[in-house]
Image (cartoon, rainbow, N blue to C red):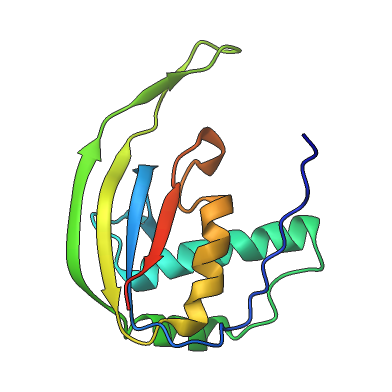
Length: 149
């Protein structure tokens, strides 16, 4: 089976999105500053998705995102989270090379977001493929996005 590259346009979709549900499928850890957060406030979730996409573009694509990071962060901070049902998962992995054990736990569950979400949707769609948060290379931070209305 031939694998084709995936390309996601990061400009806003034509339709308005005001409510969405995100399911965190694998353990997820998000940081704000130097601290791990206990729940995925939208501003933190978006910032981690945006930063990961920007870094991947800078390393493997046409360069860092040509966006106003601060302005988008301010708009993301206006998005509310009316529902958040998470549980903490404890997990470890052992390096086959060094034998060291690494903690790879985090939260899984569902969060719902409400507000003007249209401009953020392409980044969340891309995050489905890149993962979000710490240790994505180990399979953490996998999410599913569902537009509710």
